[in-house]
Image (cartoon, rainbow, N blue to C red; front, side):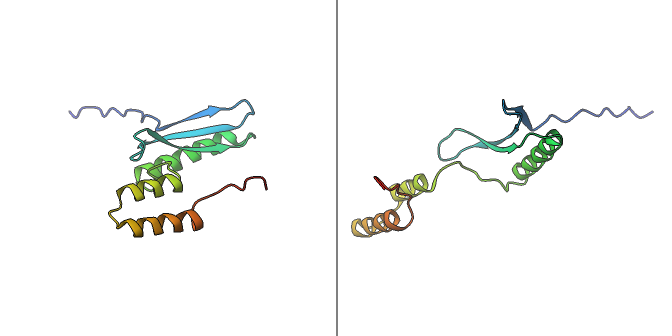
Amino acid sequence: MAAPSIRRAKRQRGSIEELPSGALRVSVYAGTDPLTGRRHYLREHIGAGPTAHTEAQKAMRRLANQVGERRNPRTNATVDQLLDRHFELAELEVNTLANYRSLADNHIRWHRCVGG
């Protein structure tokens, strides 16, 4: 006689939180951020409405699938943080590094206009 198969309920891989506005926030754990060492979550907001909970469940499944298939961003770092880290680790001549920093400052980094 074969043993009866026991089917365990799968543990949810994320959470759905209701916000004061009635909207829902879906969060799924995506591992540790390699740059900062902090916990990294994928998050999505679902507007309030009659189908909000259904949409939130779909979003949670989609985000969990992205994590499971490793199609999610690995970090929350900004472009500025990544450029700073790159320049710290780059083994370049002094003049080349200064030139690259200048190019990044003038063409890539976000600078807010002061007094404008």
